[in-house]
Image 1 (cartoon, helix red, strand yellow):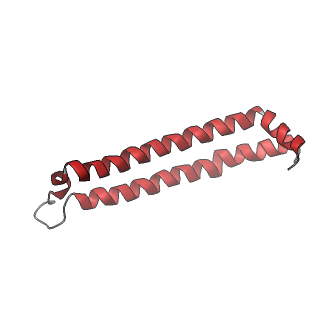
Image 2 (cartoon, helix red, strand yellow):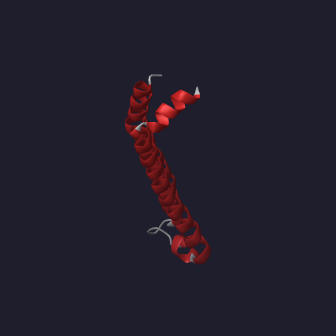
Image 3 (cartoon, helix red, strand yellow):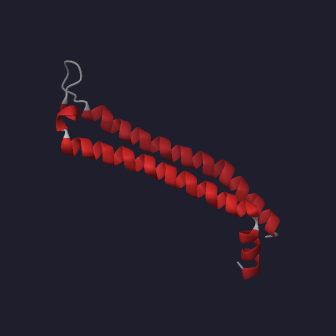
Length: 102
């Protein structure tokens, strides 16, 4: 890209909006994942008995569904980002590029 085109893109208020929204979403999802992951690891490290409790009369402990829940939570966070990226962020990007004359 040439410098003039980059300058037009950066000067577009929609570009600042795109950067702000994308960054806010990324940091929010990152914080949620870090809290969930470190909470799970912290629970394993400091109170193993909670996750070692058997569920009902079976041999499966509480740690198994909680661990599976962590995996599902990760997939959900990824899906949230993909939906926003493929919808709102791509639309804003197309508008910015069109307005810049590229």
